[in-house]
Length: 306
Image (cartoon, rainbow, N blue to C red; front, side):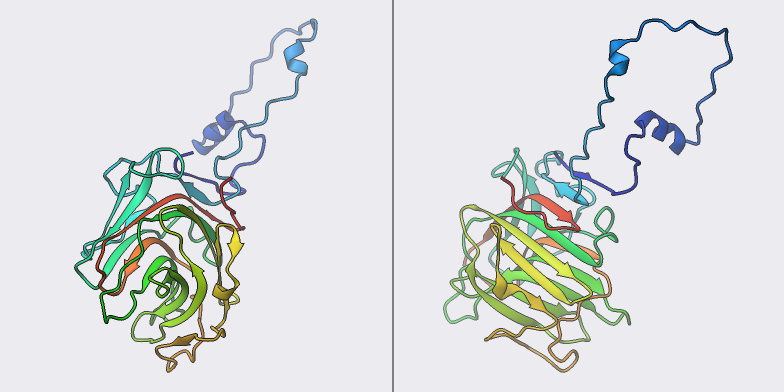
């Protein structure tokens, strides 16, 4: 499948590709010159057969899908992805050590030795945005080699696996919807809402479910602007304790600050970016190695591969 995308409604069904190509170049077909009338002959059996329908787009009806098979091993995933690791010391590279399908996947390394690592690759443009800016479904196959180990006496390590982000209407801050984890020996899943300065929030809602290690996990998400809503599925099962609508209400939830938004998980007016990988906010005693494969972004729920 490699990297592909589908732009719904951009191509009329049944229009020959040659005509589309000529139309896009401003060309028209020349009408044949008139000739002498011909006498009909016997019907060609092939002409009586129904036309073969064009092949479906590999990604339809999704907006975008990528199994990284057309990427160069050892390099960051190609466009429309962007390497967003910056100077954090994390790396994002395509490799063939482990894959859910085919031969390749994206390997994210967040090494020990620093409190903060930003192991992200992201999409900020078409074919995902702006089409999925108001509502986004997605899926990624994820392999984590080992739980992050918190040093003795330190606060439990907080990490993020995926996030949607967009700028506020007044251009003062970014609203960020995240799914990651923190407790339960480093594997307890968590919904997290964060804003960039000067607005303060950093809200959380924890799940009883843990992210598996040493196996492929199917992670699906859903972000909705209109209802300030986020949902998560793991291996096809919805995690109801990680569904948040407008604000966290489950026991044990909270925010570091309610001063600016009053605890509301205010979505941006439009999601503009999708980040995948591993972002870590505390030091660990071990490296984190994550592989991500078979990514799909859609306007409807995707589901897990068979």
